[in-house]
Length: 291
Image (cartoon, rainbow, N blue to C red):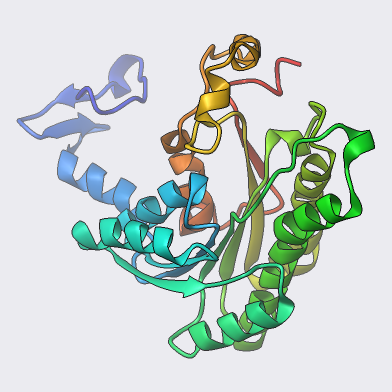
């Protein structure tokens, strides 16, 4: 068996080396190129239009080229147009396909207008609800404005985007996938981020409820719950004593990096997950499971 195959076989069914670039399994000679093709096709987004919110920074800045490398035409959406241009330049440099749209997910009118314009060029096959903010304050110091800002960005905006796309996919009877980027803080509390934790928990359960209604129509709604992932937004804090104490609580004994989420993202966005619905993929180094 070649080193690139991870399956373990015992006895007469064990594969044997055939010739360079091939492996023999159950009496069949399989070219490694065929294995590679199978994997790439399984998670392929070729021909799919993917709308990614929060694309100018953080995880969105990483997700955009990941989706493009899988073959998607990626629609970068955010208020940070200049930062998105940098992301788009990187995608175009390796031959990927993308476009930029300015979008404030707090506005239903802006979302509706955006979706209408985008759909004039073709249906959106995948929505990645990634836009989000966090306000760190003790509960007694939170204001209504704090709560509303987080809720409108992290939960209400995701709902309105999903609703606008769902309406259209039900009308044209076309399947689609909605991937909500939640958080382990939607599964447990940590303190000082009550609006964020509540919104992420709401995002998880929004997907579960929508799935109950829409699975029969080929509309998949799932979530990824990242743990502590190092980005430019939090990397300085993660280096502090508080960050070090937190790292020690993670069974993997390290913080994640954005690339750790690629497998979950491509699985849920692609047809590989065609029978997966109402699911939360926790990618956290074992953090939640160890509590």
